[in-house]
Length: 144
Image 1 (cartoon, rainbow, N blue to C red):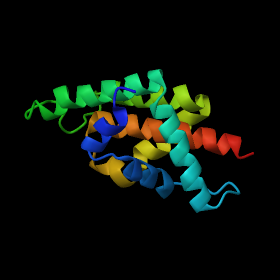
Image 2 (cartoon, rainbow, N blue to C red; image 1 turned 90 degrees about the vertical axis):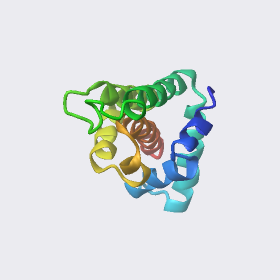
Image 3 (cartoon, rainbow, N blue to C red; image 1 turned 180 degrees about the vertical axis):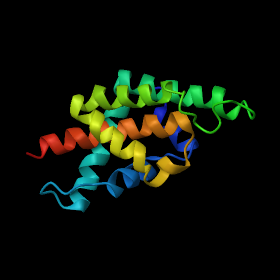
Image 4 (cartoon, rainbow, N blue to C red; image 1 turned 30 degrees about the vertical axis):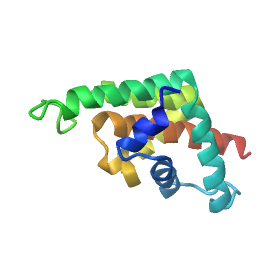
């Protein structure tokens, strides 16, 4: 939906990079890492097709282009503490997929910024962290 997979790939966050970041903070829940990687990837692919998740991801892509890359001297270049809309997008994506538990998983990924999350701008790092957090949180819940 909205070619979101391709748009993210063009920004350096292809599926392999997203799944890699998810697995860096993987907490074993009785599922071997190789199998978990496959299942989490499948879940991420599924939710990237959800119109609500895809539209929030698209919003992050467009906001990052407009407010971060096109404005070299932008006041948000260093992701200042007063910028909250990026966090709100990330939390909305996480909760849309995984409910309230995903908000806590989002915090783990947002703070540690594993893998590709550490190289994305202020909107995409949180949006992709929300995608990962929602999917991993749902995955953990479904493992029981």
